[in-house]
Image (cartoon, rainbow, N blue to C red; front, side, top):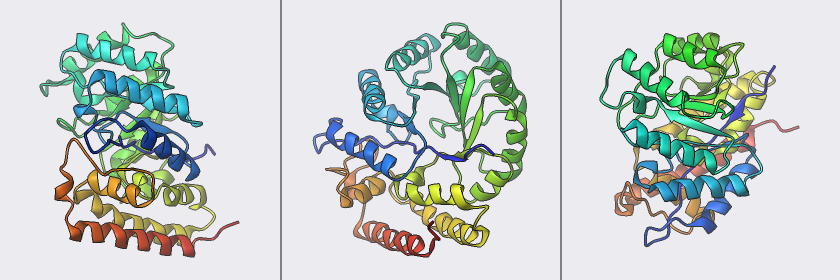
Length: 303
């Protein structure tokens, strides 16, 4: 059986004056890797890509690739105009990443129908190198555009796509999608925790979600051991689902606060949320979640 994988959606650390903090970014890469992840998804929504300049997006992608020991993929095509998107994608590819990830809503930025989506995708595919590995990401911003079965099958059967970050949050859809991509180079990564364990059993290939910015090692243990220790895996899945409610409380600042407490980040500064929004109660929720994660670690069998 192919190994199930954890691909964190990377945060971008900033200094207190708002510049990209590359020293903290280097520590972040090492922290993910020391926690056993299989790869890194840079320049995504958690990376605050919509608030990064193109130069910063390319710079972050290049830095992560140069400093990581695991594979690195990156997105970062945020424009509505397809010529601008093509330029962004080419520049990200030139940063040397292992795959360039297309955002599903950028192929139909004005919520156009499937014909426009496919036409714009084919236009991009015809101008990107055939040998360039690709991914697709159902990014929730500026709006969530889920792929139809036909669109997913088109991507998978093209042979050019290696990665999909799924945000449908529906087990039946995930199971159906796992069947659609079976036998193709595309691998399917669930971003939703409530459905995670069942989706893995249904054939999905791993996890790529927000909570890998808090306790990636627990997801690694879950995906490595769910068959060997089913009862412990079920309990861990339940705890992880409850922990995931913290996503609703001032993310990504709360994740940056957590990493600041670990000595990984120098600052919790974010371009998309004010640090002042992280109230003392929200901070206490992070600290209590940390204690719960430590307790769950103490219960897990280790070989």
